[in-house]
Image (cartoon, rainbow, N blue to C red; front, side):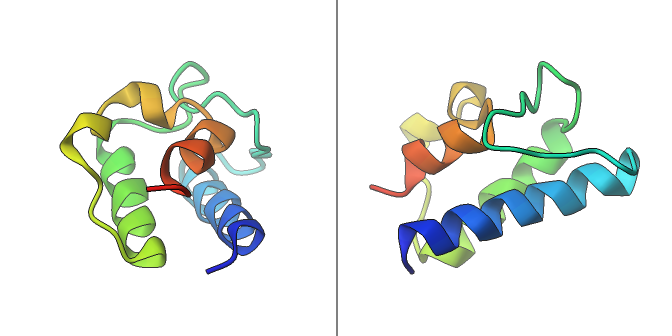
Length: 82
């Protein structure tokens, strides 16, 4: 998958998660997901599954930390080169 295609799909996926609990939420590359209380520990599992499925990877154990999921941009930068 091309990096730009993944970025678009990632933001759209996160947008759908956020709108399920907070309709009207606008997600950008810089949206603070945890700090903004848009996702929780359950939803991060959904995002991890999405990443693994879309990129056909297994997330390495050292990247199973909230620091790699702060914003869509951080997620993209953390996993597109795995």
